[in-house]
Image (cartoon, rainbow, N blue to C red):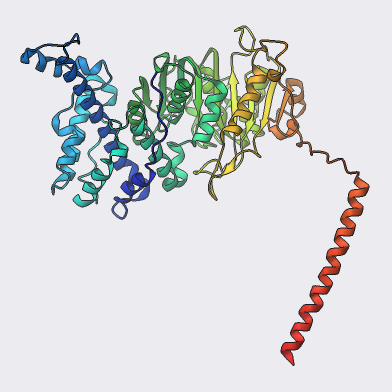
Length: 536
């Protein structure tokens, strides 16, 4: 397996490119112009690389492709299957990055770019009908000048931003992620529909470990959960061929971002447009893993439109839904889509842990009583750029009976983890998890969940830690009226004892305070004396 190279430092070039749009385009629309160009550049480079590989093989006497027949050479170079086998496509000349570069200074470059999008869209649709419409004509209608567009093309043509120049570096995938994050900052509260911070996604992925099987996200946004799952898989020597990806997203523009993001990673996927609560596009799907950050606290979502016998509901519709909040309709939806051994990691508003509204509490109590909840993780503040709502993670699992040989039996138990004091401030507004934070949380969950392979391996044994983690029984949770806030269970972090008796500490503090009072009095007199000098 080819290892990903060390990161290339290209952030400056990237933001320079976005700044080409400043003034002509609102910051929260940068993504609409930059990301489609990056997508075209990616497919164009892959086409060039594959064509060069074939050309070399056709002229290499040691290759099975070798021939001196010009007609045969042209046939192979123009055979779509030779490209499709490497997950790329033969592109018309006018849809290549080279063509855009060559014509960047033309007065009609906006038309040239939109025409290139049309050609690429048609090419993709021949082989991937689900990608039809992924690249709309947007440049001609925009306020961008030809000079703006030329500057953008030239900046994105920088060698640092070329996967062809930097093979194995996943350059374009990283460029895409960088812009998604930057656009989320510009987008503000509306960005939640397409962006979940990587700190949270990494934590979820590394906790539930999606090595193989069906991965589902029915509020998939721009596809960040899927991409992080792929990174986890590759970091552990797995193959993308061992996972299949399914997603649903209610916003057409965001779905296009997701499709581009997944296509950039050469992933096979089925993502569909629709409201997951009222228009479930995968009614029969049973996923091995669900990774999802649904919209928080959605009200007036019209549960009255659900059929009375909706298979997702745990009980009567009027008792297990509420129009005031969709959080627990999401929960019922996720549970319905899990396979018999499936596990879900769900980002949720903190209010879901304690809400007493009948339609919410009934679902939460049902989930606890029926052994659906595996773990609750409280997150620190300022992890999200796009919302100030405090959040947590619910891990739901149908794999709690201990029959798979990897995980112990955990019926009638729930693990609580409090990460409210973890992470560091990356900026004044944003907190991130370092690797040590992620490792502490994931190790705790895995030690609690996994079978201990050796009695002598004490490092693998789970232990409650005051202020951080606690293994609660269902009876304990029922006693707390089914509230799932970790702080109720983990308690207060133990303060390290310094060995000095309390009485001695008090005497020392009193002496220190008396000394400070005395110094204060001296300072006060000096200040008054100085005032006297000025008034004479």
